[in-house]
Every structure is written in C-alpha cells, then in structure tokens.
Length: 270
Length: 271
Ligand SMILES: Nc1ncnc2c1ncn2[C@@H]1O[C@H](COP(=O)(O)OP(=O)(O)O)[C@@H](O)[C@H]1O
Ligand SMILES: [Mg+2]
Image 1 (cartoon, protein in one colour):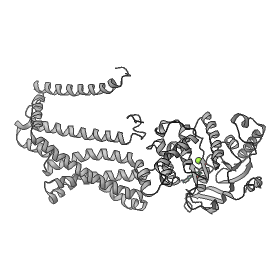
Image 2 (spheres, helix red, strand yellow):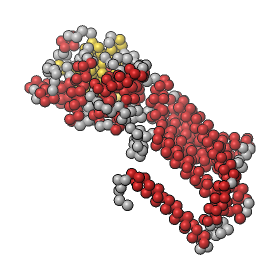
Image 3 (cartoon, chains in turn yellow, green):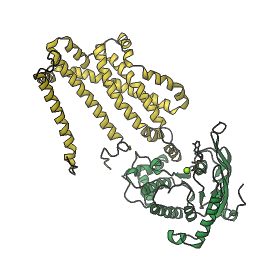
Image 4 (cartoon, helix red, strand yellow):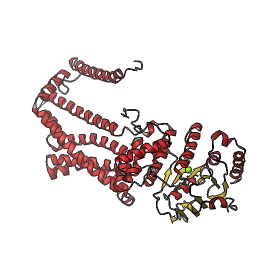
C-alpha cells in the first residue's frame, strides 16, 4: 500500500488490517479444531467458544464478575497510585529522605507481590479488601520509584528558570515539578494499570475473591463440558487487559501531547 | 592580575553602579578532592542603562559568573551588589535569559501562558495580564503566536518568547547567557538588533555573556574580557561606537575593525 494523503484512509487501513489478522487467527483456530489437530478435550472449537461467549455476554453472571474485577482493580490502583504520588513526591523533594529510604524501596520493589498473597488471604479472606490491598501494594512500589525519579528529573535549566520567575511553593510544584515528572509518572501508571489487572485476576484465582478469575476457576472445576466457558472468560480477561492498556496509552498521549515523545503522534489542537 | 582599567571614566559618568562585582571567586565542590576553581577573581561595575558584554572562551566560567550575578549561585568569596544591596537571592528587578530556549521555555505551556507566568506570580489580574502579554510579544516583534506551543516555533522565535517573558517581569536589568549562540547567522543579526531596540525603548541595563567577539563589539558599551578558566578579568574595553548601530554600517566601520582586532589579540594571547 502506497502512502496516502487521505487522512481517513490512513486511519482506517491499519484497523482494517488488524481486523483481518484477528479474523484469520479465528479461522485458523476453527480449521485446526475441525481437522482434529487440536485435542477437543482440552481445546474447544472457535465456534463453540464464541457461542458460549455470546451466551455469557447475555447473562448477568459475566457482568457481575467483570464489575467485581474492575472494582477491585480500580480501587487498588487509585489507593496505591495516590499513595505512590504522595510518598514519591515527598521522597523526591527531600534529598536526605531520598538517600535514607531508597534502598528499602528498591528492596521492597523486588519482593514478588504473590509472596504476600497468603498473608493477605489470612488477614482478609476472599474479600474485596484482600484484592484491593494486593493491587495497591503491587502498584505502590514501582510507581513510587517512578515518581521519585520523575520529581528529581527536573531539568537544571528549568529549575533556574523557576527561581528567576519566582515560582515558589505550591505554584512551583504544580506548574513545574509535576509537569516535569509527568512523563515518568505516566509510564509508571500505564505499567501499574496492567500489573494491577494481573494481580486482581490472581487474587481471584488463588484467593477466591469474586470476579473474572474466580469465574474461570469455577468453570474449570465444572468439568470438560464447561471448557468453552473457560476459554470465553479467558478471552474476556484478555480484552479487558487490552482495553486498560490502550486507555492508559491514549490518556498519556492526551495529557502529554506537549512532550517530545508524543509530539508527532497526536494532533495538538493548537 | 588585571591590567590597569582603561574604562574608569566610562563607569564613573553614570553615578552609582546598578551592579557591582568585587573580587568574586567561585569554586565548585569546594573542600573536596574534586574542587574545581571556575572563577579566580572577577571585579567590574555596570552603570545604569549600560550594555556590558562579557567575553571569554568556552569553559571560561561565563555561565558560572552569570549565575553568581543573578543570585542563582552563591560565590565562594567576593561580593555582588545589585542596586546597592548585597545579593542574597534573585532580586525582583532582575531577569535572566538562558542560552537554551528549548529548555527554559516550559514546553507544556503555550506561548501566552509562558509569558503569563511572571505576571501570575506578581498577581496581575486577568485583563491587565492579557494586555501585558500583547505588549511584550509586540516588543519582541512577535505576531500571532500566542496560542502556539514554543516547540512549534523556530529557534529565533523561541528566543524572542524567552525575551518577552523576561520583559514581562519589568526588570531594571537583564542578564543574558549566550542568548543567540544556538540560532543561524541571519536570525542572530535580527536578534542582536532586537535586543538593542528593546533596551533603547525600555531603558534597561543589560549584561550579556558571549564567546563571540564580533557580537560583543556590536552590542556593547563596554566589554569585560575574561581569561580562560579559572577566569580573571584580562581587560575592560570601552566601545565608543556611535548608536544606533546597524549590522552593515557598524561592522564595516574602521573603528569596529580596530576594536575587533584588539580583542582578538587579547583572546589569542591569553592562555
Ligand atoms: N554544576 C557544576 N559543577 C561542577 N563544575 C561545574 C559546574 N558547572 C560548571 N562547572 C565547571 O566550571 C567551569 C566553567 O563552566 P561554565 O561556567 O559553564 O563555562 P562557560 O559558560 O564559559 O562555557 C568548567 O570547567 C565546568 O566544567
Ligand atoms: Mg556557558
């Protein structure tokens, strides 16, 4: 395909191509099932799975599970994220605090969150709180580090400029420090959102809290005839992941349209 | 040591100096093994309304000196007085234009909002603020770019925005660190003429640091010539070229050539 000056076509042709790839993958799946290459006892056909997915989409159970997952994820992300921005800012602005605390933070960041899952289950049981805690904990450490580095990354010329313009206190923080740190925070948030969703599903799968993870587990335990349901739920989970990632990427593009990394990607509206 | 100062007469004619620099020295990482003396000893005065250029080779400590003069950096020893009082912080009536406009202008703000920053800090109301923004953008001969982001403009236009923002602070004195070093030759001439016009219209004192001898001669009333690092004042040269100056007329005059030659000799003989 040659370069096109038609904006609509430029926008739509990659989307069309992607849809084509998805269709091809689904057709390939169906072909492999029909030809017997895929073991029907562990891998249902595409059409069976899609039929089950359609049925699930019409049932309240799926939507309740999705809502439970989204609620746990969003609450955990909001709590962990806000705390990370607060703590990261305080540590980033204070050199002494930074130097004394950073080794501890770096260490806690490397602790696999799954290792504290049993503890969370003992304390809260199979509840929303357990899920929220796990997500908040998992999101907090890496994001805190991003915020610290972001706050400390204010360009020396920008810092001098702020002093010369007599920007102080809150005005300086909101007008200079936050925008300078924003690219770091945005990257951290995008990653945290994806990690948070994985942690939510894990908390449901292993911890037994209500949500998509638990629904997957239940469908697996219900025996081979529920296999299409398992696959349908896994598909829904995958789509949720894609939606979350692209939503945060889009948000990042909007908020950081002025940043070098985004300048050629989005119309600025100026 | 500096040679006898030939410009005493020039600095005396305007009464009390706006800026007075006395035996200023600056060492980075003083007291550590990495101690680096950037400025050995620099003294000079700047009279009200005067245009003083500081020239020195790359790494001579020009940026360091300018940051000390603006109150951004505390000298290791010596004193800087601005309008009679010793410098403690960046004074209200002083503004700075940095070399790297792409970093000193906030990329997340439009041109209008960049210029509005010092006005907001000063608590200027919305209507007055908008009038002031138009005024300073006009003063730097910028047309209808207020809604653009700085990075959408050419380098020369960006530096004009930076100058406009500095002027919005209504400074008595403007400090400029190699402000035209990152633009092409034609733009550079335009900006040099612009800054001469601005200072004539607004009657501000300017201290401009540069490594470009021709630029210093074209702009200045007096030139402080620095040695290489650690810097000292090698000589202070009076520039009695008549004003208004024009790029072609002034630069092709015999007096310009003589001054230029003298400065070249100074710079090439200094280590
Ligand atoms: N923040 C700093 N910390 C340590 N050394 C510095 C710093 N800034 C400048 N220097 C040193 O001071 C000397 C003068 O630098 P500078 O003032 O930038 O010179 P110029 O502006 O004339 O090129 C150089 O040797 C440089 O390495
Ligand atoms: Mg410099």
